[in-house]
Each structure stands twice: as C-alpha cells, then as structure tokens.
Image 1 (tube, rainbow, N blue to C red):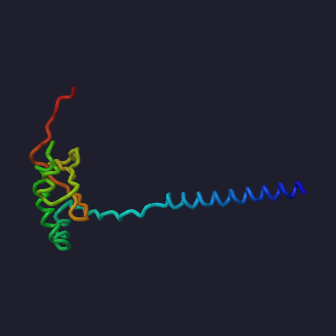
Image 2 (cartoon, rainbow, N blue to C red):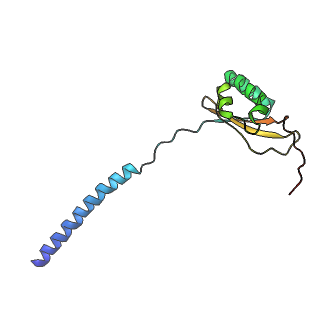
Length: 137
C-alpha cells in the first residue's frame, strides 16, 4: 500500500511539473518568437551613364533627384561636409560618402543615399581634392 501511495504521489508531482513546464515553455515560445522584419529596400547602382539612362526610363522623379546629387558630389563628399543639411536640400535620406578615395585617375568615391524607399550607390568623380604625394613620417 505504501508503494502505491508513493507511486501515485510521484506520478502526480511529475504530471504537475509537466503542466507547469509546458506553461513556461508556451510563454517562452511566444516571447522568443522572431519578429517579422521589414523587407530590405532595393539597392540601385549608379555607376555610369547606362545606369542613369535606365533610371530615367523607370523612375523619372528619382532620376532628376539623383542626377542633382551626383552633379554636386564634390561638395557632398568633401571632408567635414554637413551631409544632414545637404541631404535635406535634395530631399534624400541616409546620405553618406565613403571615407577613402578609390585608386583611379581621376579619383572616385562611393556616395550612398536613399530616395523614398530605394537605396542608391553612385560612383562620383572627385575633382576638387586631387591626390598628392605626402612625405612619410
């Protein structure tokens, strides 16, 4: 009889433990469920005239704005340029310029900006900051 009582108590404790563990697991599963992420904005590369022509055909509004941004690339990518105020001038967001010059002649930099929900990467030619030899220390 003692064995039957001990077995019943053990079974009851195990069953209640499984119910409690299941309740915690349900809460953890709901809390740890992955949050649906927003789809990434498409990225359009503007590396030459053909890319700009394609943009003109597909989205004329973005073409006009991107063309102005690229034309003013020297001003936008000069060291210390306040890109936040300049971005507002072009109705663009997330404007940034690569810190390093690409090794080409004339030198180039990568300019990134967002128009509406589309990210653009443009290769701009730097003409106001020509590279020069600097004595090594």
